[in-house]
Figure 1 (tube, rainbow, N blue to C red):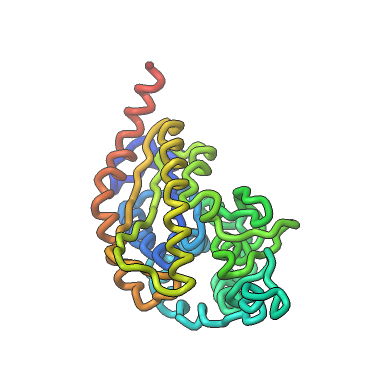
Figure 2 (tube, rainbow, N blue to C red):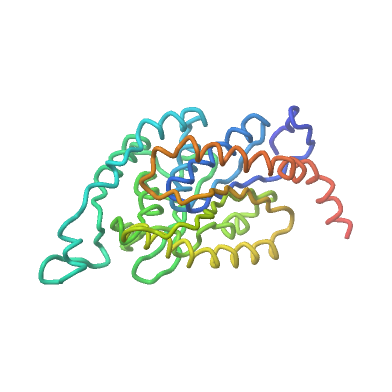
Length: 300
């Protein structure tokens, strides 16, 4: 058992897990939660990431501070990451005789994104991350969810966030893996399986009334709409199975923020700070009430 925190005043520490769901570039808002937990002296036992959330979780577990993550994202993220079109794949969508598109293809080339992950994580492995970190991906061939807990961090982050068919999947251990959004957009069940007492989830919601423009915006809107119900059903199931507290941090946006809108990073962080401010009382209460709740469970 780790020593109690003198800053926040609890005497028997629960196991705390953070789940950061899909959201593309909007997952940058999770930095506000990392800041809050660090300032309160709350030790984490598990990080679970999906899609954009996998990058945020991996950065924190790799040893980057919240401030360093802010600086790195501002430095590394650029619209050019999403501008390298794979014309052979694109033509293959229109006509198989003009190009080639299959389950290993993507409309955009992933080279620049992979170089960023190489710079961030080098040869680091998932089993070396602290706290324990697992990432949600999807088997593109079967649609099954795949939890990555071992192997290359850079490959796992890419797999979890490879938004197929925009980006091509990656082959890991004989399986073609892509974005975890298709199997568990907010993978809370993984934190429950690993017996976390207090689980903090971060999810993202856009309230845009504007019609999407172009292929990418239409496709992204479709994925958001179709996976929202999946995330809700998994969350409801998780709440029913969990034995202590699940605290959601809902990060809301009043407009659509697409994958390539890197200029929106300050707005994204501000939305994260507002969401954390609304949830911090519930987070601290869940952690501080844990000893009493566990005693009550033993007596019942």
